[in-house]
Image (cartoon, rainbow, N blue to C red; front, side):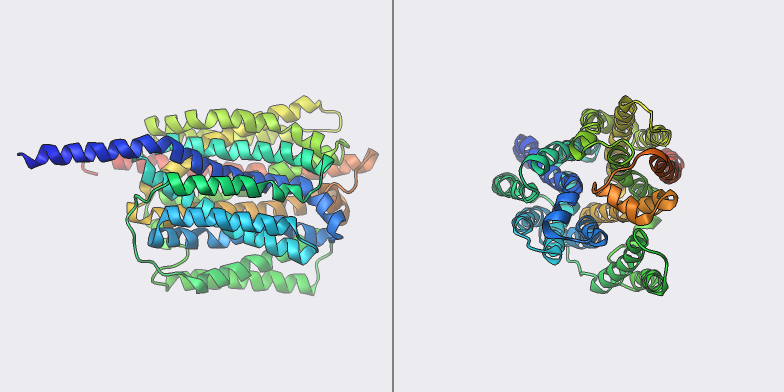
Length: 491
């Protein structure tokens, strides 16, 4: 009897200590997400200047974006596993350090190989940050408060995307593309110092093994398919393209077989046996496949047929990110109160509406319609992300937070990587592939009949994105029956 109050007081004291640091720790996590989001959008605006400054071919410059996303995709589960083994906070901080060093190297790049290689280093750091951020939040917050926490995390992503667009446009227009990487150095260094003083380990360590065979087969498989698709964006189908495509598909199939026989696979397919996890991960994949291309497609429309400069085109998309950042925390609270299924599914449905608006843009449409569509899309995305992240982490066993968080990022990133390639291929069906690619990177514009034909191609790409987004919504909605099953008596 005498020991029990003492233990309770000690537990309360410990909990109070954790709570006093939780807000500041959340700021650190948001900063990491913000920096990686900035680097995702800011490079898009800098592609034309990078191409001209380093004399990079059109078919090569896009790997500055795809290479970054691809390495994050491959490492997401592995660095999440390292977080389970050696500490999620330690791996998160290591990600900051690598990201800052990669940014420094990118700013000093001298040719196409250098910029792509250093972007891969940046991606390694970004993978450590993004894959472990979800697990760090899960350690900081109890299950009933994680939806709100993931909502604030989505604020960091939205603000980072806005800063990437605005600051990137200003830097590229008035200074130099190299400063889009220089700016990460002081911000990342300050965030790293703050993280080492604020974040503390709370999760239990677990012994894991890295799945090198799975990482190699998936990496080479995705590279083969992506190389074939990006090549088709600027040239015709030939034996070389067919070889890369077939080889990539074969290696992806081999990856599945490898995973089924691994003791600790890169993608733990056994998690798909958890009813809520399977549709959550697949919904994330198809949402990324549908939505990541939107930024590229709208910029193609505004810079091509509408003839706007990169900075003026991107500023029209800022309201969507701003409104989305405000909606995120409220959507997270709805997920905490009513469960993640409703806000996630409604958010995906709202994004379908936004894509429908984009699909009806014409040469004479008011530019205010682009703003409206971006706001609707931002609201939908902010409804989906915190709720879906909360669903994944709630369904995951605590000892597998790192793996589950990494798997979520892997599925989302696979969708994002292929989203660009699919969009370019579909959009270029009404115009020369090489010209469509040039319009995307801002090196040419369209007028007259050519502009109308190109806009028709963009409509087809938006309709394809609508299909993927609708499929994500259906997958999300299937979680209703699983939630009801868990709430039934005796479950």
